[in-house]
Length: 415
Ligand code: ADE
Image (tube, rainbow, N blue to C red):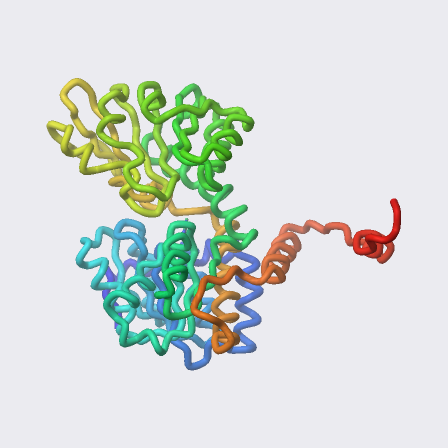
């Protein structure tokens, strides 16, 4: 059972998946393991992830391990319809298309839950929230969930602290082999890629304002600077602000940055980061892009309320006419890397999704021993993924000698 845009789009989707698979060696090794062990035999996995080619490679890996898959998107604009069609051809239950309304988005999450999943794989935690809010009859059957992103993890931890989380959740985001690479190098590249593809404008010489200096902000600032931009960082956390300054960027309040920025990129995970008071002092032609999970970092309500008219001027670019100037919003203020591009590069999603696949297996094998809280992934899993990735890149590293091992553990011995 599936509901997608058009099944005839599948050949293009299959080619995209084939390309992604070829560049995801760690996930391919896990797939071989799953093929032999069938860890998910008899298990249904409900997934809400950005439905593009790399996600399809994760889903087919889980299928290879014996899982039945029910999948939807985690953003109304990030699904690639050809990939969704190819997933249906592979035998998955798919409920997703690009351009879903809010109602359709929630209907599709419900349709995934109608399959009564045993394990949840989420990006932004919408499936897990829906289970706790409206589908509580299904909670008892759930072994656990895996969460992909910072935004989801923050709220899931809040739920656990309140004692209302009803199954264990694995925090995939905080794995070293996830956030150090996906959030930093993945976001850094894919956000600049999305902006450049969409605008066809030069980055060199521009004032690029990066709101938020978490791992995503660090990555975006690094890549924008590497392309010749003058990077300005805005922050609310003094430690991160200091780090940004010592990394060589200008740091100031958004109200000051707003006056001089050419391109604004939000990466905070918080709402209303760019508001009317900022938009009103921006320069004519300023470009606004969001890289955070939700489309509330740039206040679209404020932008609409201060504008006289809006028109689409290019694919994925809306021009807001404020009378005395024009501002340009990319991808409707939704994740610019996925709405205006193809998401993170395959090689980083290889590690993120290797973490998802192994975390799902960990849940299957350990759920009875786990409490209803948010767990970090086992460090050994991180080490294993990093080792496999290095091997796939043809890189060998040193090992401690027995003497060095003794030296590091023996506190009695002098230097
Ligand atoms: N592709 C699939 N999931 C993604 C994510 N969370 N971020 C970027 N690209 C992705």
